[in-house]
Structure formats: structure tokens, C-alpha cells
Length: 161
Ligand SMILES: NC(=O)c1ccc[n+]([C@@H]2O[C@H](COP(=O)([O-])OP(=O)(O)OC[C@H]3O[C@@H](n4cnc5c(N)ncnc54)[C@H](OP(=O)(O)O)[C@@H]3O)[C@@H](O)[C@H]2O)c1
Image 1 (cartoon, rainbow, N blue to C red):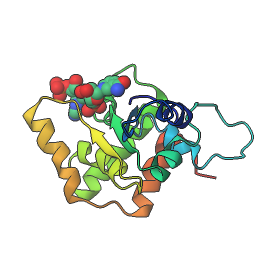
Image 2: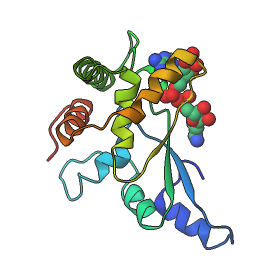
Image 3: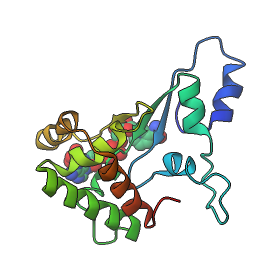
Image 4: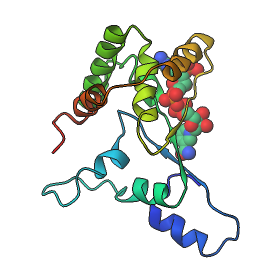
């Protein structure tokens, strides 16, 4: 499945015999609604992203989350001149941590997804060998909680509640 809410998966599962085992969704530091929704429950003024509960429900029911555009099509690595302010902030935080840890920026952005306890599987799209190698560096690093939340807060543009 792709881009399904938890309710759509549950509804579909009522009518098909094959177990529904994956949900491929856009997810990255530049598009973090599924993760952000988990910390914004019962908050005033929350932007509606239509993702509420989907990450938790998928974890509870053994549906793997596959993250498409995990590098925001390269915008998290080299933000273009017209990149939005949130993407610029996230890319700057990624670049800063990459320098501090001595690893590729691609690896930092992917490690942010891999560190999440949901077992998120990033689906990278590059066909460039050098970029592929940079992405693979993500397997060799473990972000600290402080590093993970610093990236998240930079991408959100405000602290977590
Ligand atoms: N289910 C869905 O609705 C949906 C939607 C979109 C995509 N997808 C799937 O998800 C896969 C990944 O999505 P994506 O391609 O958007 O993922 P991505 O890994 O975020 O972006 C990869 C794209 O960004 C470019 N890029 C530019 N600078 C880059 C850098 N420094 N590092 C890595 N890539 C850079 C790549 O070009 P180069 O090849 O030149 O590096 C490539 O075109 C796709 O192949 C597709 O199968 C699914």
C-alpha cells in the first residue's frame, strides 16, 4: 500500500485475504507529519496533516513503514535557491551534524529515520554511485537522543512540546 491512513488500511484489510504488510509514505526531516503528529495530540492550534495515528497503528499491527523521498529528493542535502524555510533549517542542521560527526549529510538524514523505534525503512531514489555510498554510511552511525531531537526541532522550527 502507499500513502494510506491507518483507517484506510483497516478498511481495506476487511475485504482482502492477503495480509497488508507495508505502507509506503512520504517521510523525512522535510516532511515529518507522521512523526510530528505523535507529539501534538490534544494541542491547540495544531495543523491538520491527515496522518494522525497512522504511525502508531502501523506499528501496533505489524505494518512496515517505508519512507519515500527520505532525502526530500536531495533538498535536504543541497537545498535549492527556492527551498522553503523549514527545508533550509533542516538542511542546515543536517550539514552541521555531518561536519560534527565526520559523516556524509545523506547518512545523517537517513539515520534520523533509522533511529526511530518504528523500524522505518527508507527507500532511497538516487542512481548516483557516490550518493549511494554516502547513503550507506547511515548504517554505521547511531544518533544520540540529543542529536535526533536537535534535528527534529530544527525541521519543526520550534521545540517539541
Ligand atoms: N509511493 C509513492 O507515492 C512514491 C512517491 C515518490 C517516490 N516513490 C518511490 O520512492 C523512491 C525514492 O523516492 P525519491 O527518489 O524521491 O527519494 P530521495 O532519495 O529523497 O531522492 C532521490 C532523488 O534526489 C536526487 N538527488 C539530488 N541530490 C541528491 C543527494 N545529494 N542525495 C540523494 N539524492 C539526490 C536523486 O538524483 P540522482 O539519481 O542524480 O542522485 C534522485 O532523483 C522512488 O524511487 C520511488 O520508487 C514512491
